[in-house]
Length: 426
Image (cartoon, rainbow, N blue to C red):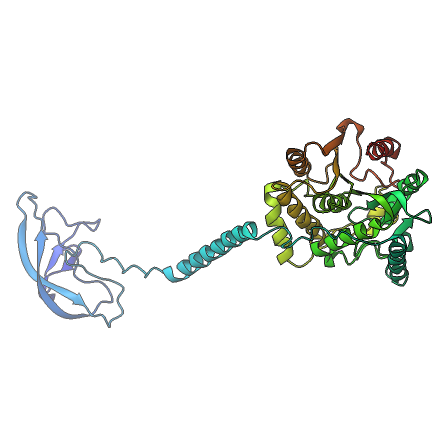
């Protein structure tokens, strides 16, 4: 007899098989009931279908189907039909780690969205801006007050002597006093040429130094300590002192100084003329609608310095020898916070200064021009008779710093005559 498989109940009968493992056409075929290495422990009755030489006449044969001993270590399994192995149970799905990760991501997204909304909702202006001090200083008081400022600055070893506050007076009160507010990261030396020219025309000229500006260490300054309240106090103190120096008080400022001039123009009714030049109301790279969120974010975060090194900046020719290389996020947004205060009040209240002239440089890529235009429109809408503006055309190619004479890209021969005309027209 050829190869076969063991029959029922462990007897010695074999079912004939073909050479290929299939049952021969002359004999019966059945699913194998044994496998090498298997141990049989019990039998159950089952049904096996046998195929004869005549496939159409299949017959049913009763037999016993052995079950595998689970302790025998056999890898084989037999299912109820005996013609395919039972699939192994699927490994349990590990949802815990994935669900935890998803929950964490959702929580982070919710926190980011909530924080973003909070940055927009928090007030971006100064809570209680000082409106008007209406100083009653006389000339002697004003000179004494400046002497105190001068002595304090001279005693500060961190200050560059070239950057101390400056007063050019004529020994007595004059008809016209002008306060010149220097720019952010700069100092009073920025105005040294224009101040002399104005003094030669009879103006008493006061150039006060902003807090945390004009330091000897140009790379590592204390600009990060500057606040919006300090800027407002600085502006009011300068206007108060100027009141004792003459009859007509004018304020003119560039960049960050333009922000101070805009504040004085909006809130001080003892200012006769306010001229903000390229006012730092916002950054050119930041859309005006995003400014409040940027201001609040910078307030929540620690101050970040993003300036240049002395080695790279000194050779560029666009830094004055007294300007700071430090550019601090907290300081920059302090100017922007003051600007938000001015813009909000200008939308509902006419400026309090006698006259305002906004000067805009169309080639400026540092400050936010649309925000300056917004202030221009609001001043002109509520006080059209006393508000005007002047634009330096873009083809002139003027830098953001229109005033400082110590830059290689300066055009003061073009700018100064225009400014003198605006002043004398008052």
